Length: 188
Image 1 (tube, helix red, strand yellow):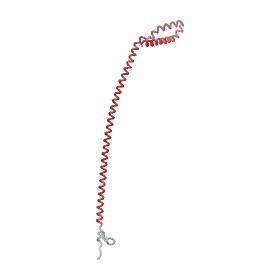
Image 2 (tube, helix red, strand yellow; image 1 turned 180 degrees about the vertical axis):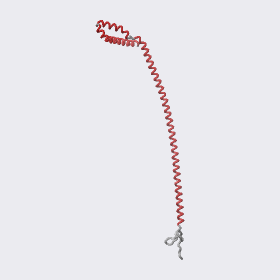
Image 3 (cartoon, one colour; image 1 turned 45 degrees about the horizontal axis):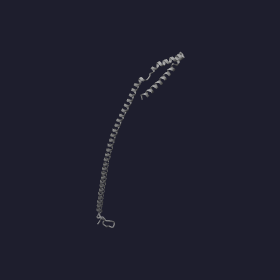
């Protein structure tokens, strides 16, 4: 019998190796490998899901901690602002008190200055009639000038009138000073 060749792509019978020993069908092996690969992918997927769940839990924990700290910082900021506001209010009260005291001291100082100025005005007004004026010395100055003019002649009289007037004013100033000093000692 002639052997017929099987059509291309089909087997002539069970597979055999070089020594004509039947070979095991690889289909079961392929199915086992595919099944192992699927289990491997399932395991990898489970591990990945577990990993991502742990990351998500860590992120949630991190966010909770961050929120807690932000809340604490906000509370501390509020406390600091409250303390600052209280300090500002206290500083404002202190400044107002200091300004009030400064105004009162300024009023007292002005009142004292006004009293002293009024006393000085009263003293000057009271002493106004006590001093001799230059007009009171004019007759004396005229008399002294006339006497000197008679003694020295008419020409010298004109030249020395200024000098004599200066001497007369100096004497009047000296007398006025003596008078003021003596009144000051008598007033005590």
